[in-house]
Amino acid sequence: MTSARQTIKNQQGFTLIELLVVIGILAVLLAITLIAINPARQFAQANNTKRNSDINAILNAIGQYAADNHGTLPAQSTAGGAKALNATNCPTATPCAITGVIGAGNVDLCPDLVTNYLAALPSDPLTNNGTPVQTCNATYTTGYTVSVSATNNRVTVNAPATEIPPATAALTVTR
Image (cartoon, rainbow, N blue to C red; front, side, top):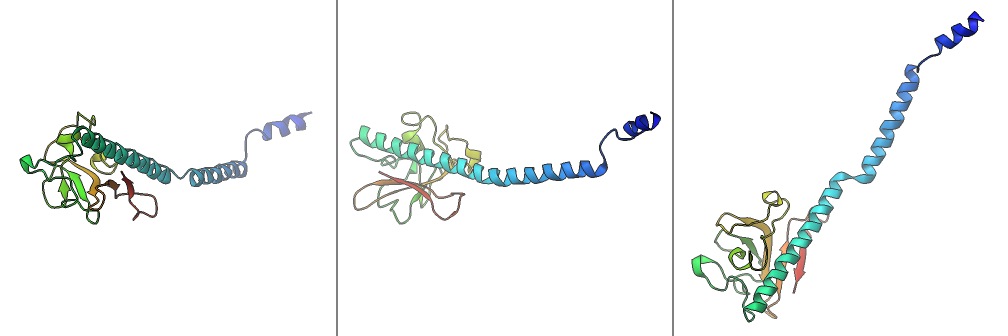
C-alpha cells in the first residue's frame, strides 16, 4: 500500500518536456494566426478604403458646387491668390495638389467646399494622421490631387499614396 501512495505522490504536476511541448504548439498556432490575419495588410486595406471614400466625397462636393454655380468649378475666383481649378492650371497630365499652400501645381478647394458641401476637407491617412481640415488656412495639405480634362471638362480626384501593391497605382475617381 505504501508503494502505491508513493507512486501517486511522485507523479503530481507536469514534467519540463510536457510544458515545453505545449508552449511550442501554442507558439506555432500563434505564428499561423498572425500570418493568416496579417495586421499590416489589414491596416493598409483600411487606409485605402478611407482614401477611396475621401476622394469620392471630394468629387461629390466639387460636383455639388458646380451644380449650384452654373457649372463653374471651385476656386475659379482667384481672390487671395487661389489657383482656379480648370484644365489649364490642373491638367490631367499634371494634377494639382489639394492644399492651402499657394504655388505651382497646387489648388485651394477648402474655402469653396468646407461647411457648404463638406463638413471638413478629408486628408490622406498618412497626412496629418488623417485629421480632416476643418479650418481653411494656408498650412493645410490633404495628400490628394485633382485635375480637369481639357477635352470634356471631367474632374478627376486622385489618392496617389496607396499602400497595397502595386503601390504605384493611385486610387482615382472621375466624373
